[in-house]
Image 1 (cartoon, rainbow, N blue to C red):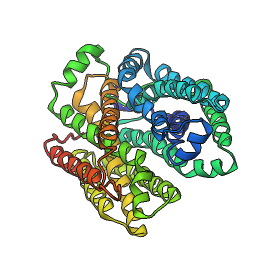
Image 2 (image 1 turned 180 degrees about the horizontal axis):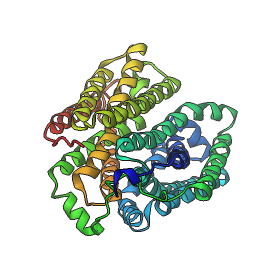
Image 3 (image 1 turned 180 degrees about the vertical axis):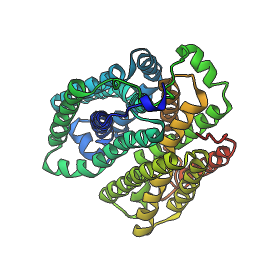
Image 4 (image 1 turned 120 degrees about the vertical axis):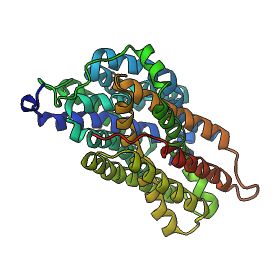
Length: 402
C-alpha cells in the first residue's frame, strides 16, 4: 500500500483507552493485598502470611502455561478476541471477589481465574500497536498501554490501605464494580482494527506459532532480551512483593512501604512515556535500553544501602523510571528483530519469562536476609548484580533503525 493511501484514525486512541481500563483494573486486583497483608489474613481467616502472598504470586505461576495459549489465540483470532478474553475474565471474577467474605479458598480460585486473564491482555499490547498505530507511534502506543499496568499497581498500593480503613470488604466492592465496568466497556466499544492499515509496513507474512517459537530461540537478539526480561521483570515483581519487608527493618511502617512502592510505579509510568516517545522520535532502541538498565542498576544499589526517607523515595522513583522504561522499547525491538514471528508470540514469551523470574526470585530470596535485623540487603545486592549483568548484555544487541 502506498504512503498516500495510508490513513490513521483518531479511533486508535479510544481503542487504546478501552484496552487500558481492564488492564489497569486487573493489575489493581493483583496487587491489592500487598500493603494490607495483616488485614487480609484476618479477613480470610488464615494465620500464615505466605497464603496471602500466594494470592499475588498465583498471577506469576498461572502466566507461564497460559502465555502460550494466549499468544496462539491472539495470533489466530487477532486483538479483539484475545484481549476480550482477558477483559471478560477480569469483569466476571473481579466482581465475584465481592462474595468471598471469610473464604480464602474462594478468593484464591477467583484470583487464579483473574490470573488466566492477564496474559490475554498483556500479550495483546504489541498486536494493538501494530493493528492501530503507524510506525512513528508504535513504541509510544506500547508504552502507554503498559503504563496502565503500572498505574494499576500504583493505585492498588496507594488506595487499598485507605479503603481498608473503611472496611476490608470495601476493597472488594470498589474494585469489583470497576472490573465489571471495564469489561463491559471493552466488549461493547473496542474494535479489532481500523478499516485500512495504519502503515505501509504492516507485517502480512506470519509463521505458525511452533515455527515462530523455534525462530525466536535461534535469534541472538531475542535471547538477550529473554535474559533481560527474566531478570528485569523478575526483579521488579520481587521488590514490589517484598516492599514491606524491605523497609520495616529500617524503621518504617506499611504506609511508607505503600508510598515507596507507589513512587516506583509512578517512576515507571513517567519513564515508559518519556523513553517511548524518545524511541519513536529518534528511532533508537538499543541505546535507550542500555541507559534504562544503567539507571535501574545504580538506583537499586542505592536503595540497598539507604535508610534516609528522602533518599529511599527519590531513588525508588528513579529505580521505577529506569527499569520499567526499558519494557516498551524492548518489546517493540523484539517485534522488529524477530519478524515475521507474530507480535503476540515475541511479546508473550518475554512477558512470560518475566513472571518466571519473579517466581524464582521471590521463592529463592525470601530468606536471604541479614541474620539479626532481617534486612533484605543481601537479596537486594544480588538483584543489583543481576541487573548490572543485563546492562552489559544490552551492549550486544544490534541497533534497529527505521
